[in-house]
Image (cartoon, helix red, strand yellow):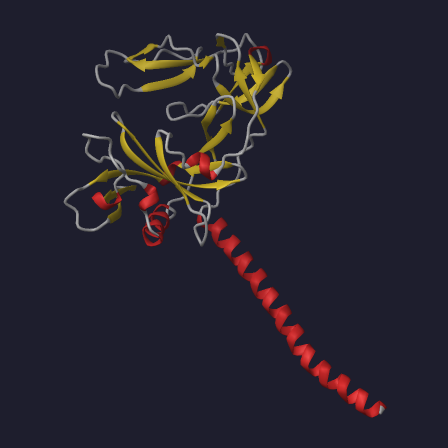
Length: 300
């Protein structure tokens, strides 16, 4: 009788071991797939978070931005191209103790105006060191008096927030697959035309390398749905009417709708722009009191 029991246990064990091994193997396969998916997602646009741990908002009518943590040090000033009659006038920034710029006049515009948000890079005594880099200003930081600013709450950026119909831009957030969390934004305005931007949603903010911006325009006679190319170091995209956003009554379509892009088209766009090395990155944050705000930062 004991022999029969032992044989039965051996038989059952022989059946269970392969099953347990298979389950364990399947579990490891799933975990490996998840890791590979995460790795692929991270490697598509691998941009580190900026050193922004705190944000402040200007609470006075005008606040000075100083070169050092000293109200007697030079201030950041703006110069506008003189006698410019076009809509694309050049702007330059420098410290107030530097020589006048030939062909430019000192602007009366307030740089640190009431309501402007700055990312904080550090603090020294009665001053915060804030990020001042933007499309026109290549001076990366300045000091602002703590008495001129207040704290402002930051909340995570969500996909539905980006894809909202009332945004001034058209947006698509990829929800799954190799390109999960990739953000494609199409912006149009009368002065600068149309720009397509490729970024990534991570840790509650959107990071878009400036190198991943591309000129975009509609070609109603184009047979191909989309053409992505590189010319003189810059990317551009041409698309036909099938990918255009619905226009308002009486207007012609003039903007790409990222939500109409299929997986193959997204791959073509993303794989093209990511061949370029990022240097400057545009970071988008959400502030419940103000909405979406954008800050530039140079990758160190």
